[in-house]
Image (cartoon, rainbow, N blue to C red; front, side, top):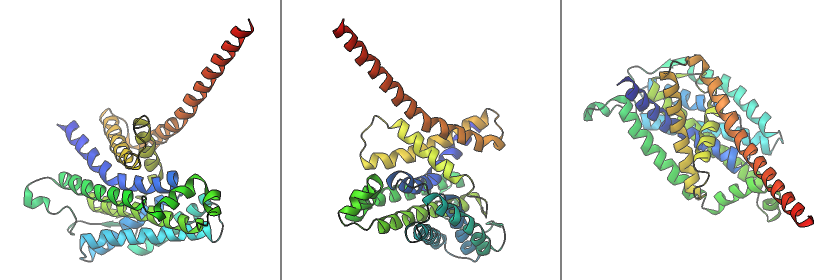
Length: 308
């Protein structure tokens, strides 16, 4: 029974955090930018949502405000990247550092408990299900909505321009597309989704903390890599790619839950995540290298036979 509850909790975390992973995917894969704002903007979403809730605000308004706050954080990163010509990694680091102080200002302290406040999951009392089950339902609904909107948006002219910018920026610029604008839109959208996830997670866990975003970028990358690895031989349709990230996020949480049930200390989770991401990123390289070596040996063998 304990194991079943652990898996249920893992599914709950997976469908909430996958929205953050979708945000990371936009910059990391589509724009080919290593945006490290993630840890800060995730906490910003939680902070904004928490402050609104403790003042009696509507949970939906709190989530939308978190989304907007994340968009502002993404705008700052995009501005540093495109207008100040600061390298992407450094621009993200600067935004992340600045957001730590901003989040403290928003909350007024390092931690805000949400006991006794309204949340998106309160309706579970009326239907007789647990908070975790209600959170899973809300997470799935929001995830489906986000995936549908992303699929639609990246099928538009602007969305295709953003994707093309990540593939070949020089070519896109040559045909008259403002790549600074596409990067700006990408970072805004990415961090908006990340903050939205932060707001949902804060309501689910019952508190917002200034450090709740630490390691979020690694979790996002782990979800992306796991999903891409599983769906590597499946159709590369864009909707499949988005779906793979959702699946990757859930599987990552399942793995964590299973490992914890086996007795791993929670202190080692970040190390485990880092190892998983490192292995997942390295495996494709070594597989490609082995294929190249095999091809080289086959060709040299054929040449030797002909010469003989």
